Amino acid sequence: MHIAQAQADVRRIYRGGSSGALVSALLWFAAAAVYQLVSPGLAMLVLFVGGTLIFPLSTLVLKAMGGPSALPRGHPAIGLAMQSAFAVPLGILVAVALGSYEPTLFFPASLIIVGAHFLVFISLYGMRIYAVLAGALIAVGTVALFWLPQFGAISGWVGASLLLLFALPLYRQGRRTAALAAHY
Image (cartoon, rainbow, N blue to C red; front, side, top):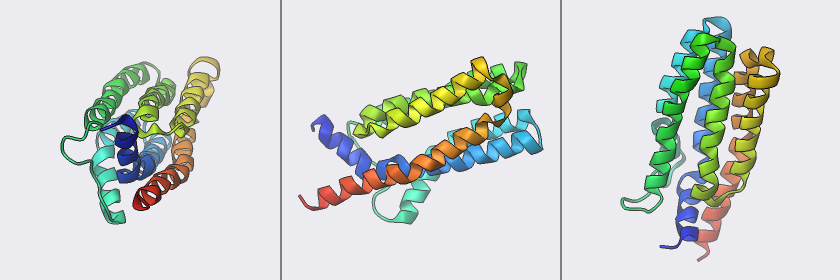
C-alpha cells in the first residue's frame, strides 16, 4: 500500500479526525471549567484521565455517525496512530508536574504537548490543516508559558475553542476524501 492510499484511508475512516477534535474540545472545556470553578488540581486530573479516553470516545462518535470507525487490522497507519496517541498522556504528566508547582502553567504546557502531538497528524492524515492547528495550540501555549503567564489560567478555554473551531474543517476534508473514494 502506498502512503497516499494509507492517508486517504485514515482521512475517510476517521472523518479527517473531526470526532477526535470534537471530543478533545469538550474535554478541554470541561477541564477549563473545573479549573475555574473547583480546583486546578482536579482540572489536571480531568484533562489527564479524559485525555486517555479521547480515542474510545471518538470511536463511539464515529459509530454514531455510521460507517467505519476503525482502520482494518494490519493497516500500515495503525502503528503511527497508536504511537502518537500514547505520547500525549505521557507528556501531560510533565504538564501535571509543572502545574503542581505553579497551576497557571498547566494549560500552557498541555497546549504545547497536544499541539506537538498534532504535528504527527500532518503525515498520518496527509492534511496540512493539522500544521495550522498544531501551530495555533503551540503558539497559545508558548505565549502563556513564557510571555503572558497571567493568561495561563484561561488558556484552557482558548485551546478548547481552537479544537472546536477546527472540528468542522477537519470533517469537511475527511468527507471530501470519502466522496472522492466513492467515485473510484
